[in-house]
Image (cartoon, rainbow, N blue to C red; front, top):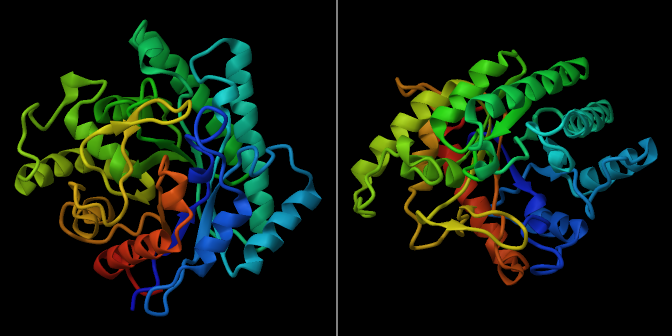
Length: 341
């Protein structure tokens, strides 16, 4: 059996879309327990990707706190992979102070990431960012705001390089300047740093093909037949051809072609359960558009893949079977597009 890419679960779905304006946050320890307990034919998760977000984790944690975190995760026989930087207190296209805060959050996240590597619990992964700006605000001055975002990202990349970290910009339709596949490519080219790349999420990036928030970049027609797999595959090939060369982090997910938001989170590509009969993606097959090049060769551009299931109801997330089903989907992706290392 293939043992790469490593299989990770994400912890931030216990926070994103939760809180006072939605359902209660799912505790960090609970997510670790369910991840560690998942098993399919003797195969278990290899690790977790972490959101450095309150109330799970404090971005200003002490070195002793970082050691305790490393011990806790490794105690479940899990590794740590990619980290989400809590950059939303600032904005990549905001005021000078907001942009300074954005970069500072990236710096703190990279420092934690480096320390986790030193402690032997983190062997791969990136630090994830977005523009921390809405699409409507960006649209007030597209060219000027994209330049501001690129400048902030450059500053963040320079800081990350000091820690030996790479940054991955998440492709999601709710982030201004990153809300279409063409805008995303333009932004990454403008940043022009060796240590920045793209974080592809199968749910979010599928919405790119449908032109949500950027109808001028739509690939699938408005009235496309959702049962037409050939049309969907063709659209995915267009998006992945443009963004695959930039992709350094990858989320396996399912989507039914609709948008969804909960709590304070803006609407974005709906994350469906791995077994959702309304899902439009063939998870194992369609992951290959990201994991293989145009000739069908494995890119091996990242050492782990992660399941992202934000904004699932707590009743779903607190069922152990949910995580077994997710693990099963990840295993199928690795069997189809993995390697032995």
